[in-house]
Figure 1 (cartoon, helix red, strand yellow):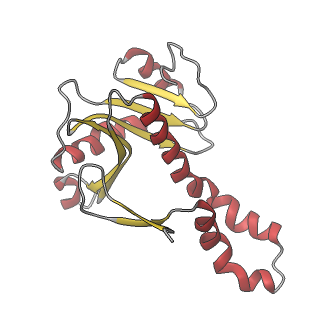
Figure 2 (figure 1 turned 180 degrees about the vertical axis):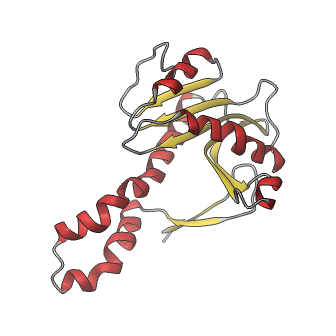
Length: 198
């Protein structure tokens, strides 16, 4: 019935994950199925929504937003990345030894000719994306990706930042100064010196 899909990091077939394909089923099994008895016993749907659904909804919607961002990259930047997916794997060895970080994940990863050409982070939150997201990507995630054996293009990867709610001013300033950095909100498709991208 193809209700479940198998996913692997773009640059490796190890560390396979399985997830429900259909977003409605994901919603049902997370927010409805475990609470059926309480709902039948009289729990008001509005109370259930306020207590259980609303606080977790941004986290639940985030994978859908990430998938939409990957689709945008395929449709818009196909000349730079012939394969687009995501990546997850172990943190840097020294950080794992110190128990500081165990694993890393990159929401958008694009490759061409088996080399990483672009990477991206997606945030579906009410807060503006802070510059710490970029710092985290460059300080921890990209080195972990290299450690895992990924090869990078000579110019290094282009960095894409996608945000539902925009960006803190410090991150907008960095995007204006760097040629390798694009930032985009889910509600804006205009190009400016502050936010290059689509």
